[in-house]
Image 1 (cartoon, rainbow, N blue to C red):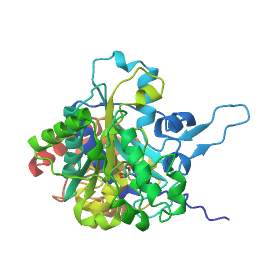
Image 2 (tube, rainbow, N blue to C red):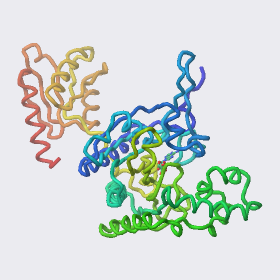
Image 3 (cartoon, protein in one colour):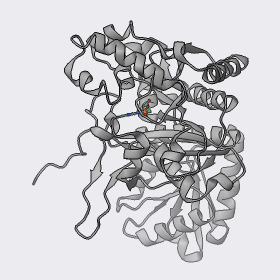
Image 4 (cartoon, rainbow, N blue to C red):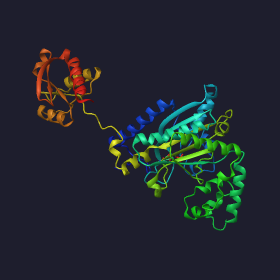
Length: 434
Ligand code: AMP
């Protein structure tokens, strides 16, 4: 037999990890509900052109990392798995005419994204993102709302020391002259610019700025800064975003080299980092304004801003900070376990447990064929409060109910069982303050 394994760069989230993820998702949902962001779900695959146009062909995400789905012979369409959610959500905005809805439209989604990345800690080929988007509002106040929301999410999740890195990358009015200055700067140093970066110099010079290559990092230290080239409108927008963040005391650091990996951004760009973890160069999350994206995907021009926060990296940092166990709920113990004196009679246990479940109780039938003593041992080990014991009394319509914590036991009519147990479980919960 071949040994089957999860594909390279993917992970199984076993129950403890999956519960932690569910805990993070619950925090995200609670926050977005309260901030007024409504859920949206788009397909995990789209026409590849949605990403090629929406993200930009000269980006790592599209050039190297897009998971393309080979078309079947009877399908002409080329599809790809989504590497990020924004392009798909904007495609949906255009398709469903959301520009006619009351503006702005606040949306949120949480789900797996796919990038053919080189796997390493915190970098996977399938990873989860918590995403919010606000469309139809040019900002600057909503920019601050979104940045603050992300910051609050990390706080609620228990991640210590999260800092916002903030920049403005200008717009169609001021970026071209900045790009020209940047290209001149790199051309003067063309001899020193490593080959792969040089190939990008003319097509997408902005991408050279966030290169992790040590030679490029050294060159970039002296590169012209976009904040020095902002037009008056972009400079005023940027100042106002900062004023809003200051007003609610969200700490941020101005990062002139922050450009974001995706092409569609304009003006506000931001990323979240854990301060003490910078050596790893991994952002916990990031986002920005994308005022040109709707038009790029065929809609009437509309501004937008959003973020994508990587849940895998949050889980990783929580583990590093020794907070992992606080992040998610454990598996709750059953209220009731249903056991019987006759090991073979799984039908009776199944029927009684199904009834109790129907009445809203967390009831667990012992479906193995072991002796009563063993069934009761397992019930105690699982932390059940009550055991329903099916024995000879069942013929007369009765069962024994044992309080495993108190050690007491009494006879209850099967017809009264759900009601009696419901009351007992409720008073137990009340008594323990759960
Ligand atoms: P990006 O769109 O590249 O800025 O990604 C936004 C966030 O998604 C990042 O800050 C990470 O938290 C997360 N992320 C991106 N790529 C990966 C990956 N390959 N594995 C895990 N998380 C990722």
